[in-house]
Image (cartoon, rainbow, N blue to C red; front, side):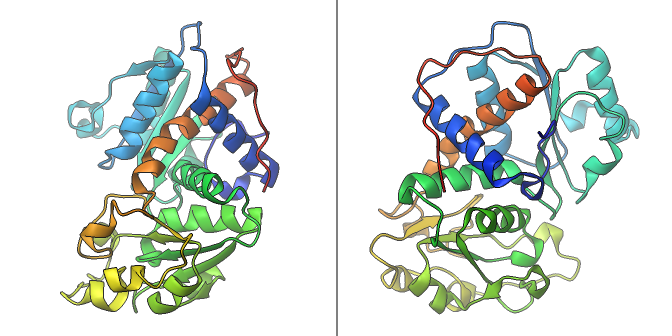
Length: 308
């Protein structure tokens, strides 16, 4: 049983499916938590979808959100992440959600922090809650993961989304492929790389990623031809399978990795992913609070188990 939520590598197949089942339950109905519970959202990197999704999920559950902004916090005076988290714990936070630029920021916290810690993004390491909402979106489409072809395309080398997703999808029985421009690939990950033209032919789910310029040590210069050479153009979209879907964790750089008109086309599930993020994060937080004995909940709808 996991008492924190840090990596899809640490979750069993059964735990992954359990979270998805609970998220589907929350999508159909839920009751608010009645006891006072406080959550601290510590975002040290910019975020729109993840941060707002956590706040909506917390308020739907009835959790009080502790206000935190890095530009107004003691980190400006040199306070460490560890001391910030220990402060939140000391003043009564029951769980903490963290996004930080370091790949393994949580390793220094875990031996000393007694409240649940949720990884909302760790440098270029992992982004496990994003992976869970992506998994839910894929399951809603195909009712299974077995032999579903998922291609993750874009800046693989610097993508925490790619890492979390490929570990989880592989565990659930999907066929995972990676696709990247020269200089953005990562052959060490152990998954087959395909070209973008191969990707559109084989994918049941095509997950596009932006170029993460902020994480590049050696600046990767995307040219005006990046979309035509390595991205999802309208012409390539026409060659996708009839049932295939387009995904993207966002933010989307329209006209770079994907043609702007495809973001909201019929096969796009990009905004569906965002919607699913609320229910997945509700499920993750409820699980952690329940495991710590801080939550006793009753669902308003009967749970249906998700199987791979």
